[in-house]
Image 1 (cartoon, one colour):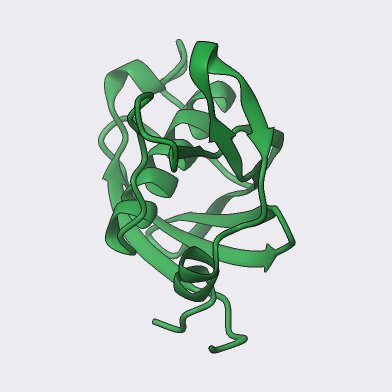
Image 2 (cartoon, one colour; image 1 turned 30 degrees about the vertical axis):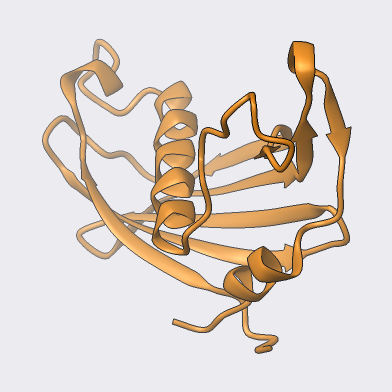
Length: 142
């Protein structure tokens, strides 16, 4: 197993709904963008994003921390270059860093921490260790 954290890169176009009255990406829009990139990354490594409630192996990844530092503006129809970096995989947690650029200019750095949980009946969440297969995929070098 590699100790090098995975890095995932993608692009997103700034949608009109993401902007404020000045035409600049609203601070709150970065959080759904980061979540969307996380889901894209998880699918790329074979991790199910929305588990079946009926399966005893249903894992979900609730957020326990989210932050974003804003470094520069992005505007409607700009193309954002987004890198997701797995900063750390703990016993039951995963810590992601997001580097968001526009035309090589830094726009934002975000961080989201999630915890591996089993989804039980009635929506009950039970914290679980990150399975070895997922841990290996999270630590794989691209």
